[in-house]
Length: 489
Image (cartoon, rainbow, N blue to C red):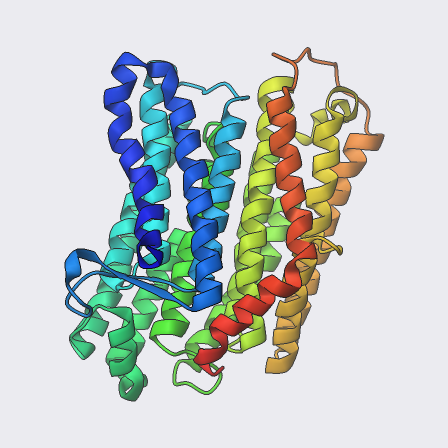
C-alpha cells in the first residue's frame, strides 16, 4: 500500500475530473463539492504518504510492473512528499475559497471549470513524483495547457494573455525537450536515477553542459524567472479571482521544484562539481530577479499586479538559494518554496475578496478596507510579516537558511541581494498597511454580499499556515536536510 500512495495522490483528482462531466449532466450542483472532496482526499493521502516516507524512506512506484529504467517510475522522497502535501492542502483551501467568490465568465461552464482544476492538480502531482525526464515534460505541458484554459475563462483581455502564456510556454517546452535530447544522447536513458549514475563520469562534457543550459532556459520560462517572466504579471492580474490563488501558488513553484530536483538529484550539481559555473549563473539571475521584481512590485498600483511582481521576486530568492550549491542554501530554498506557495495563495485570496466583494482593486481604494473588512486587513498584516521575514512566520526562517547558505558559500553579494529585496518588500507592505490604516477612505462601496464565514475560514487557515510553518520550521528543515544529505554538497 505504501508504494502505491503516490499513484493514488495522482489518481484521485484525475478520476474525479474524468467522472465529473458525466455526473454534471444529472447533478450540476455536485461539481464543487466533488472537486473539494477530491482535493481533501488528496491532502489526506499526501499527508499519510509523507509520514510513511519520513518513517521508512523513499517510495518508488513502477507502473505496469515494468521495472526502471525501461518502465515508468515515480519517486516519493521527503522533498517530493512535502511539496505534494503543500499542493494538496493549498488546493483544498483555494477550492473552499471559490465557494465564496463568484466564478466570473463561467456561467454554464462550471463543470469545465472544476474539471480543469482537477486536471491541473493531477498534472502538478505528476511533475512532483515523476522519476524520468520525459514524464516531467508531459505533466508540465498538461499543467501549462490547463492553466492557459483557466486564465482564459475570464474572457476579454485575459484571452490575449492566456494565448501569450501558451506561446511562451511552448517555447520553454521546446528548450526543455532539446535539453533532454542532449542528455539522452549521452546516457541512453531517461530515468532520473539511471541517468544520474551514467552522468557521473560525463558531467563536464559539452553535450551535458548544452543540455543543462537548454533545460534551464525551458524551466526558467515555466517558473517565470526574470527576464523570462513576461507572461506572468498580466496573466495573474486578469485571471478570474477564483483562479488566481491556485495558479499563483502552485504552477511556478512546481516548475521550480522540477528544476531543483533535476539539477541536484540527476545532474549532481554542487560547489565541487563541473556544473558549479551553471549554478553561479543561476544564483546571480536569482539575485537580480529578487531585487528587480521587488522594485517593480513597489511601483505598481493595481493590487493583483503588485502581488504578481512580488511572486517574481520570491521566485528569484528561491533560485538564489538553490544556486548556492550547498546543503543549507538548498534546504532553505525548498523550505521557502513551500512558504511562498502559501503566501502567494493568501495574497491572491485577499485580493480576490477585496475586489469581488468590496470593489477594491487599487492602492488608492485601500483606505476603505479597515472599515469594511477588518479580516482582510488582519490577513494582510500576517502575510506582510512573513514576506518581509519577521519571526515566528515561515518567511523568516526560509530567508535565514538561505542567508546562512550564502555566507557558507562566501557569496556575500547574494546576502546583499536578499537584504535589499527584503527592504524593498518592506517598503511595499509598509505602503499597503499605511494606506489601509492611515489613508483617506474612498467612497464606501456596499459589498456585493457580506464576507461569509467560509471566506473568513480560508483567510484564517492560510494565515495559520504561514505561522505554523514558522513554528514547525525546525523539524521541516531537518527533514529537508536529511533528504539532501546523500547529495554530499
